[in-house]
Figure (cartoon, rainbow, N blue to C red):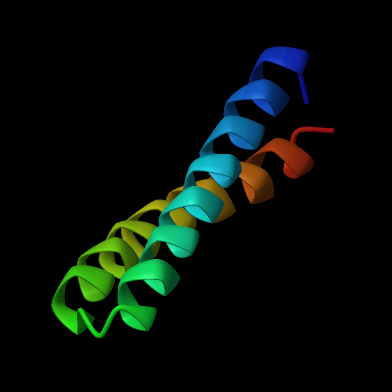
Length: 60
């Protein structure tokens, strides 16, 4: 895995973490709809990151 790919994956994982923190914040404020939007964003992002990780490891 190249350093560029690692950096991209790291950035995407950090973004997922930020989105989850936002979801938790809105859930604690009893704003389930907004929390759900952030969760949806993470659900869309993680399968893409997962696939990149699997294919990157397979190439070596």
